[in-house]
Length: 439
Ligand SMILES: Cc1cc2nc3c(=O)[nH]c(=O)nc-3n(C[C@H](O)[C@H](O)[C@H](O)COP(=O)(O)OP(=O)(O)OC[C@H]3O[C@@H](n4cnc5c(N)ncnc54)[C@H](O)[C@@H]3O)c2cc1C
Image (cartoon, rainbow, N blue to C red; front, side, top):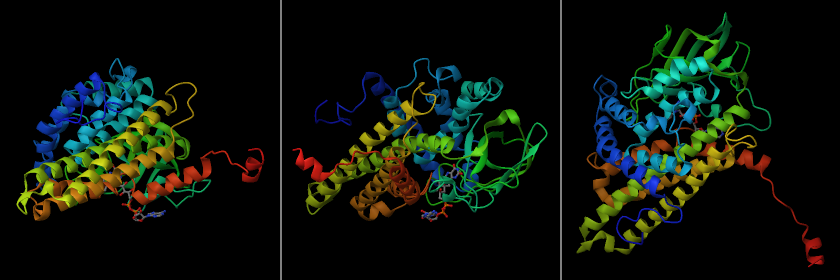
């Protein structure tokens, strides 16, 4: 494709024929299902959003009926026979983000318990929980990822220097019990899909005497006795994915539901899981950025001021160019980061070293920042219309703002990347004098 209408990707870095088909299908889903559902949800009260018949459930059921939830699983756990390439995954994630950040987030957290069960679960757990989830075409199952706690948000990203700091006692504690563990405590009000999820992937401090960073990781059915939910939160952005607290009043978790046994959260498990989530969410963020850019471009071509479409004014041209440049560079880097993560996660092949936290975090920080900056610039291109609750850009701006906090704040993600590069970045040092002497 040349520079004509519709050339969304550079041929060099863009998708091949298979990815193009996937992209077209995912884009249709985003246009016909995700955008309208997200728009309707954004205008509802928190209670309406989670009531039976809410567009949230229709959107999730559509993604399931099309099999999107299987795309990210290995074949042996019910994924496609021919695993989706990292590029194809990127293409799909970008379209989901373009359609709705909230529904894309809901889709991703739904997969988290299952992806981790597929990797770490016993054959019994696979049969009991993964198989029905894979076969579900109606949205009967929905996962969430319960990490943060009222007093431990950024703390859970484990900003650490050498050994993990303790940060005191976690607010969700797993006490040993006969044949398993008893969960007591709570998770924060920000757990995505918490109010409607059927299963949670839960981090809990192991033992009363432990600390935040010595946890177990388990999957918990949320209809178990002792589970309670807080009310759905009323947030500025990402309103299309309900968020809410989860309380555990002595919930029994059998040993076989424990996917990662008690131990230090970092570096082995936590770093690698966060590499996956960082590189995935970064591709979604590119979709948010592209959505804002395309809205602004469309508006600038049509809105006439000063006797001409505003796209003819130089300041708008430079703004549009700057947005385009950022979307394109973010796409390139986030695709590379996802491909690197997928190829290097432990278990991906016998000799992999592990995914790179600094690269995954850089992808996440960069793409989130780009999404926010592009949404900000797009709103400016819209003038007052951009501030109106009737314009999509107003919603995109609120969503992009939330991205700077969702799944780790920009600052904390960047500090974590800095820790990794200061500790682990390898480079050759030269003695200048020696070098010049032999020159
Ligand atoms: C849309 C959305 C979806 C979410 N989904 C989930 C979910 O599915 N599951 C879940 O468990 N949680 C979820 N969260 C919670 C999210 O992970 C936390 O909000 C985030 O990690 C920040 O924690 P906090 O809000 O408690 O802020 P705090 O940790 O209180 O941070 C407040 C400020 O202090 C800074 N700060 C904090 N600690 C440090 C430090 N050590 N060094 C330097 N600066 C620091 C931060 O950068 C920030 O600016 C979600 C949040 C949002 C907004």
